[in-house]
Length: 259
Image 1 (cartoon, one colour):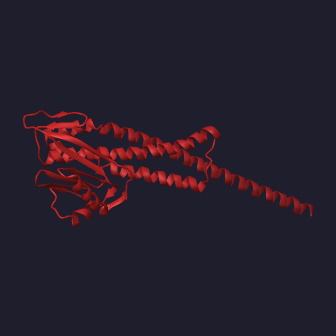
Image 2 (cartoon, helix red, strand yellow):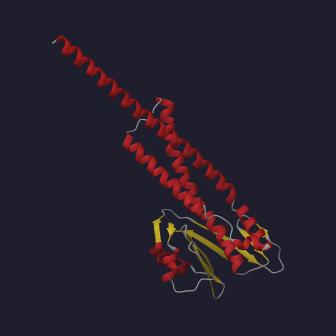
């Protein structure tokens, strides 16, 4: 049994800078990832959406590497986001999945990469789901005010700050989720395709993505409503200003005629 572990350490990792300064030649790499296959069945996978995956590393080695990796991160995350999976390699076994393990008849760099990638997406999804839930909960506070008072009791400046902050969170989620696609090797190899689909089902990647996307659409609709409310409030204010100006002109005209 081999244990594959992934850790979310930040919202972003500068993979390009990491590759330039890390001593080691990646087995495969791009602007978004760096995958290293080392001796003694040890593997390392760094992904730009803040996740690092390990196979064959001791606890001390993992801890030391994560400390080193933080030199290349942006927006470190709070909380303990990690996930693991046991892998049983047996050439005579069939490809089978359970909630915390997988049995594989093949073991090579591509197999390891697919396994780590799916676990990495799952642990990143944990973080994005938490962000999405927090944003959705915060919008409910304002929709509750609309239901109770017929208006949002917040100043224009604070409402604009909230909308800006919420949009930044929403955009950050989408900026990272777009890379949650299967690699090209999956479409070129039947076994890798079965492995990838089985792991995505095990970790409910597609279903969780759809649920998060649905939540973010609700948030987007709420933000549109809040913006309309803000514009309506500003329109009413301008209307009252115009009415008062006209009233002052009428009063001034009447006074001038009386005098």
